[in-house]
Image (cartoon, rainbow, N blue to C red):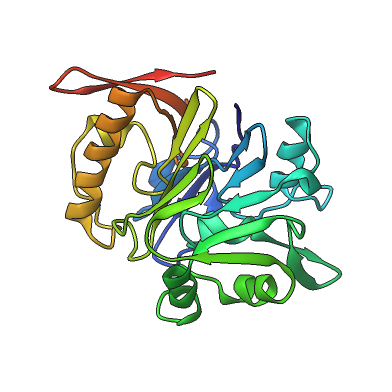
Length: 257
């Protein structure tokens, strides 16, 4: 198994739900009062049978009108067309923006040859229009031209890939466990989004079920430590890939380069 973080940088988000690039080297967080600051790291994972993309970032482009996501996949030594599976933890915009790309004024799937795995309840929620965290035009485009496999609850998608309906960050959030020979990785989406959330036990106001999400982080951290799972932290500021130690009292994170 090979793991490639596809970092899209840092952003501030205020009540408008707009993601504004934030460079800590030149920008001052005091100039953006009321904002939440996040870091975005989709992941590419190569196994013996698949090239897997975990969540898709914001879908922002570089100066050449190319998706950062596509550029980073090429920098990792692959073509975007090589991606066989797109595994989505959930469909909030900062995770789903890169599912589509605008070309000639139209949105089209960024990975038309890949199988997209999405919880059915999350898809239906995204289309309901009840939350500005979802951008419906993304899913309109996706359903017209992409291969989508809807899953419900928890189960085994294929040998070596398990999904679990977790429902902490949003009602139909899911996490993934991948085994490839002796290698194992865990993608917790926004229920284990950064190492610090293991170290500091707290309820996050942006979670659908804050108590459950906090408890799940603890469960996932202990399982990863006990069984040797490598964790992928989607919103990590630094060290997005890490192994976990737990001594019965607190967690420590060992970065994986």
